[in-house]
Image (cartoon, rainbow, N blue to C red; front, side):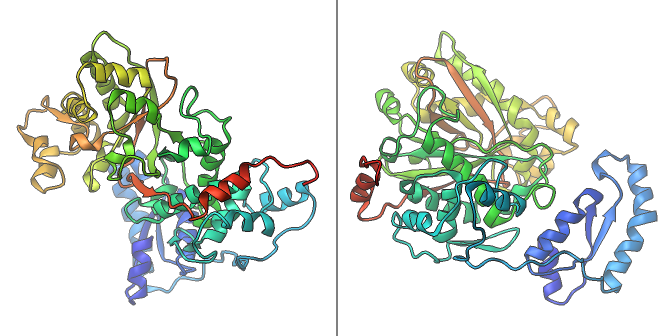
Length: 462
């Protein structure tokens, strides 16, 4: 739809082919881009589930006529309701807590849980924790083409139950969201990927993030509320709404923020994940990456190699369903969360993090026919065209083993979770639908004083 809008803007007619279940999303996407009506040829049903014969019959009897009409007849307006956007500082609701929440829910500004009413006073308190102007444009987010600003970041942070001192993290998150390398416009896709947020740096302890037992469980204010903020911001600013522009087949609840256990990393001599992402050890960094599915593996074994072998097997199992995304650009980048004792056992076996990634790259492989038979893709043809590294076509033997990622560096390793358990969590990443992006968290000059004021005890009367 986005490509069709650009073509229509230069005066050329288009015909966008969509399946029946995506008509509303198509109209809303076009409307968000400022084109209230976009010609569409609608395929009846779902093309992936029809035989070649059924597809051919539908093209001849249904699609051809629609395509001709799209290219020759100006379509009527889509008839979608046009509502006025509130100004940034408009008061959009008054009343009790319950009344405000009912208004927000009816307006689709909430996630189904009660929200903290974002009063002007609360929003301004958040803005004290950033030196960026309240209405500075950080980026423009699709599908609604709405501007991301510190003001609406603060408003959604209040709603999510964040504390004001989380504001620097929230701003960095939205900077990462708006980065074209991340690819946020694809987050309304049918696999319904959620986004895993990973945190590094001293700010983990300063703001009280959980990085030990139950690392991804709700219950810790910072991890939980910032995870909730991400999904609220996608709804309220980017504009991803279920049954409309968010077409997740199943979807999932927002993911709790993962904070690395940097004490454990120091103990085994590994660098934090943020260093792998190009930052210095000790920098406060936030990383975002899509996750469609996850797999918990108890990977304890007698040697580092056996641990890594088990992890490699599971990486293939969970990431293979998204292997086709490798053909659209960069490699997919699975994230492997190791508990501290498991990471320690690997390190004790003589493995640096880099060497562990190299081992995984050699072992996380599968017979080419698993992809070629299932997906109907000839990996050698993609390698010949430069879409895959040459390693994917060292022979034409369908039993040849090919890697699940392009390079060892494509694996992301995070150390967190229960220090006393031999578990790892493998997250399936979605390639161009949310490549990992990291941002340094910028703290205001008066950070220490502001933080001190927030944590200072107050009398009940205050």
